[in-house]
Amino acid sequence: MGGKKRRRMERPSIHPRNKYSENPPDFALLASVYPSFKPFVFLNRAGRPTIDWTDFNATRELTRVLLLHDHVLTWWIPDGQLCPTVPNRSNYIHWIEDLLASEIIPKTSTAGDKVRGIDIGTGANCIYPLLGASLLGWSFVGTDVTDAALEWAERNVSSNPHISELIEIRKVESDGSMSCGEGLHNNESFNAKGEKDVSETSAGDTEVLPPSSLHADLSSTKSYYGPPVLLGVLKDGEKLDFCMCNPPFFETMEEAGLNPKTSCGGTPKEMVCPGGEKAFITRMIEDSVVLKQSIRWYTSMVGKKSNLKILVSKLRDVGVTIVKTTEFVQGQTCRWGIAWSFVPPARKIILPHVAEKNNQSFMLEGLQRQFSAINVLQSVESFFSTLGASCKSNASSFVVDVSILKDQCNAILRTGVQGYNENNYQYMPETCNGSSCLPSAFEELCFRILVFQQIPGTLLVKGSLKDRESPGSGFFSSIFQQLEEALKNKFCREKAF
Image 1 (cartoon, helix red, strand yellow):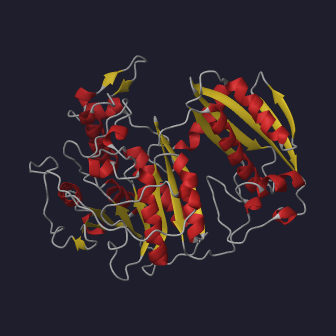
Image 2: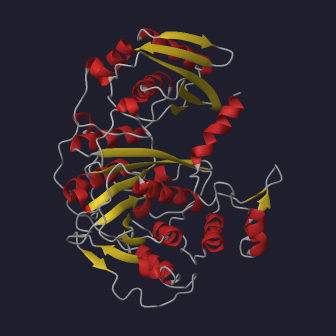
Image 3: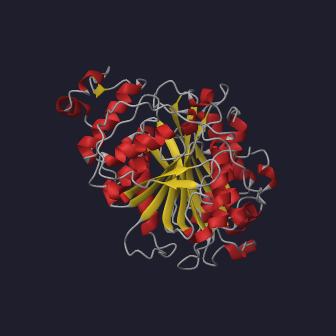
């Protein structure tokens, strides 16, 4: 049973419109078509073609041939620059496509159906503008600070004349000004592996914005010191449909190199900043407070799930109208996406109890050795029993069935996060309290919690509502989040970040 559940959980890991959702890259086919890729392909123990993911040259060549074979894009980056994975980056593009197509907030573009966005820190690879332009016809501003990144982003744009007019590369200066790429798309074509000095240049530091009034418990977050992110980068009066960003996830290059199973390259400017991704995205949030509706959807990738709650808390405090999050899983890599907007909703924001999320899950990673799945299962039962819920557990199938009455739900929510749904969060400025939070027809919340072992030291905890039409799905999400926090505090080793 556990195996079936795990396979089902993998299905949403890749966006259904992703070119690779039904047809993963065929290494054998690519090796037969592209001789340059063939030396990197070998058979693994199961007899399947693969590559050495710790070899930067192999991952770079795979990205090159995928972009050429599946997207008709000519592409290259020099040694040491960040090498993106095409399927994962495509997931992010399609998620933004979903956000733009949703009716949560009205369209504000004056350019008809034309979509224009900005990629913060586009890098030498320029992957998001290339994919967005080729897949969906979007136009992009790609920003960066180093000469190497800017030069190679320009090369990758100019090497694809069929979309080059859609992409502008914009240099961000350390003093907050920007340099637009005039004359950079003048039909000049580059050899994808052209030889030239691409040494990196320091972008210097810039003064940060005055701190905004955020939660006191976030005071431990380090401030971002570095080149501008959005303020000073957008032109006066410039309006965009979205921004996107692969932030510098780490605080040090040592932290960035902790995964020995992959090699994606990456310079310090791409991978590292003081305070890591939390500080960088906080700066994005602070900039967005000033820019407000200049950008319809602000979005960023997030590398650590533990940072999502902190960032959502910040966004609640600054008065956004909507926040949405998602999870991107591709191969062995997990990333999350966060999006927010200041645009007034097209219709009244729905209360949490009508949210449509009926399934929730989280990972317990770094489980202490003395604990096992049965200990977690017992704690799940104890957690809900303590709250007055009716529980029935089955130790052989690692299942707990839970029933909570309406009044008990309200009591739980009054002491915890209200209306928070990790994968479809919608912020309601007015708080609700007491039984008024729940519809009168709602009487009882029934759901099932399952515990699966993924690998030694890692468990998957999954919750699902028994009644998919239940009006209590938003409250189920809130209760499930509190369960996650309790279990992680009890069973998981504290991480040093």
